[in-house]
Image 1 (cartoon, rainbow, N blue to C red):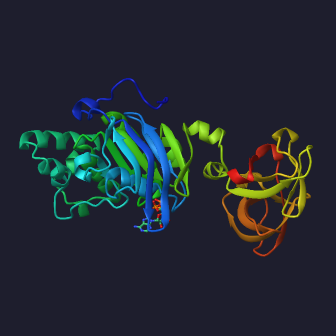
Image 2: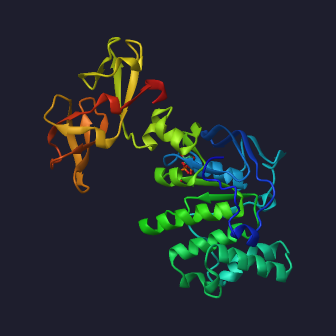
Image 3: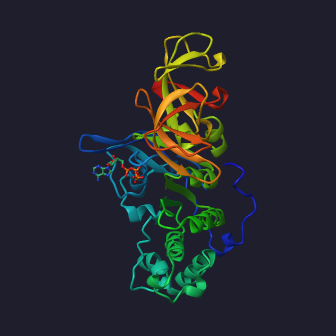
Length: 366
Ligand SMILES: Nc1ncnc2c1ncn2[C@@H]1O[C@H](COP(=O)(O)OP(=O)(O)OP(=O)(O)O)[C@@H](O)[C@H]1O
């Protein structure tokens, strides 16, 4: 675990003791829908109490992975183990995991207190104990004063906190969250992010959190798992992924949105990209003739008069201080760039970058 994890126990921990266990292993996880493979062999060991973010573009298989862990989707291959025991054939409720989804999925005609206590009532937890645990969970999400309201009387952020209270009140070994903040406005998302991390630390459960938002993953997780096309591209601490992305897909999520296909021409770093010649630092060490991909951040690909890659502007918007836009290179590659001045859609532009601020991957890892 990394620096996020505090050895001191926050006050909430005594109020809502965490479950024992929570070491989760995914072994060769597979899930197909007909002939389509949505998960193609996922291997991951998650330590007890760890906060893991599954990060990746739409359709990469994040939700499928989460639903398989939850037991909402059967596997077509592989195993899931909790504290060494296989659990992939257990019904969702037998796994005892807490779940929080994008839609809060609260019962509209039940009070907040009843919504949060529902799982405990189903488990047959005695009334007095259930009441105390509901109070503790509501304290943790700072909603005790709203306990007798109906969900419709609360804001979106408050409703999501109820959903979180409902997930943690059962003292789950693992909490699963699928894009829990995506229905909230930007300011609330930031506030809730901090709360989710604090709650995670207070209860000590393992958390698996699905998101396509790089910032959310970087700020919340002990480790980030970047997925693409049903496989894991890279697993690492946020700072490792940010500073040393091992694959073009990971670099993309860490802000290097543009990928320019190129071919190495000589050992001095001359490459050809979209019909133009560029020079990269020779130390990048890709053999002449090899196909590579150059990853660049939008702020580092600059429109100007300098000799650069010829492009045609597709879209442009002002973001304060500078314009940012997209453009097509001569070979059709879509790139994202910055401009000091306003450009018009359809206008020709010349785009250049400082080679030292790029990442270069072999084409097959891009
Ligand atoms: N029930 C289903 N039947 C057929 N295909 C499915 C089903 N559920 C998911 N898929 C496909 O599996 C792939 C992975 O979907 P999944 O929902 O896991 O992606 P995701 O990474 O969570 O994306 P998003 O962020 O858009 O939810 C997609 O191509 C999707 O179309």
